[in-house]
Image (cartoon, rainbow, N blue to C red; front, side, top):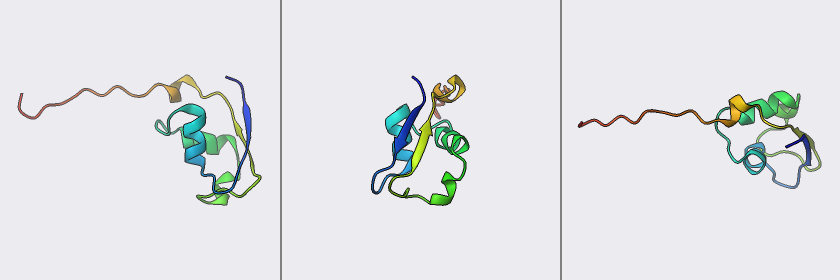
Length: 75
């Protein structure tokens, strides 16, 4: 995966864009995309029409979900 430049459409939200690109919104991927696009946090929840966003390949630390041990109360 290489860097993709995305141009926002009407009513686009960054979390939805991240989900479509990376398949998840967990592991701070949305916050990481905000860091890669300075000033985008000022747009608010719904992004303005025609805004360009750079969506680079996610670092492996962000793409691997954490594995949690299951805990059973009555075992």
